Image (tube, rainbow, N blue to C red; front, side):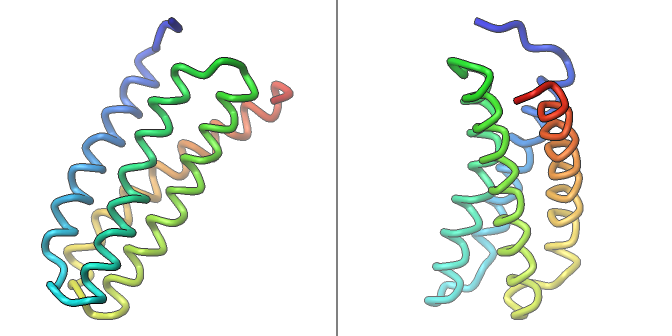
Length: 123
């Protein structure tokens, strides 16, 4: 098992807290077809970010680790999309969604920097 440094622990904690916030906000969406569909999508994408980072910790190779990190980054982008749709469509006010958009942006920046560093190392 790999030793997990504090940077990784902080990112894992950050994504776990983000997942909880996504779950909570999804329950505030309207109980109608659009609300149910978007809640399902945002919960799947938003919670998948951290889940893929956890899987990366147990990667069987450097290539597998890189792949899992890039999947997390893709989930960041999808989550951002669904959050933007939530406020653009008026399902929830931007003041409720805004903090989550800021958080997913921050997580995305961390993952982009990680992917860049891994690419520089030849992954």
